[in-house]
Image 1 (cartoon, rainbow, N blue to C red):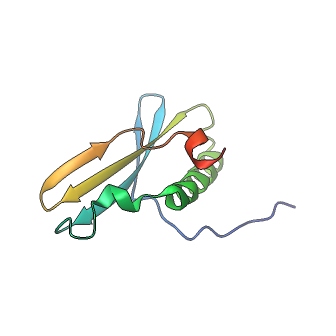
Image 2: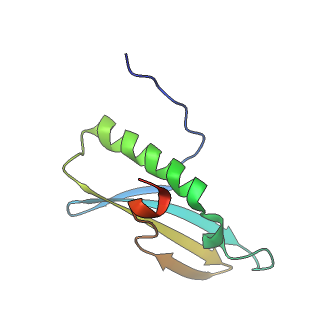
Image 3: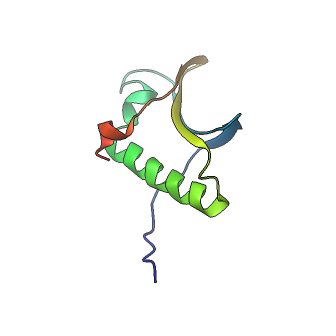
Length: 93
């Protein structure tokens, strides 16, 4: 029997483009006083998102699709869309 581990995170947006599933983390800041939104997407957060994305891919039987991880970071009404925010080697797998 497989052990199920609860992952305490969420994925804000899951989208499909051609043969790719895109998992998007969205962050919003009114000011940059405490940093930009994308700076909050650290290694620990990315690892949780990756594990949840793996579960999603397996549960939907989307193994044939590529995965991509993006971050949409808003500062007021300005958007920074960082595509491919992480690669597997960066978070230890």
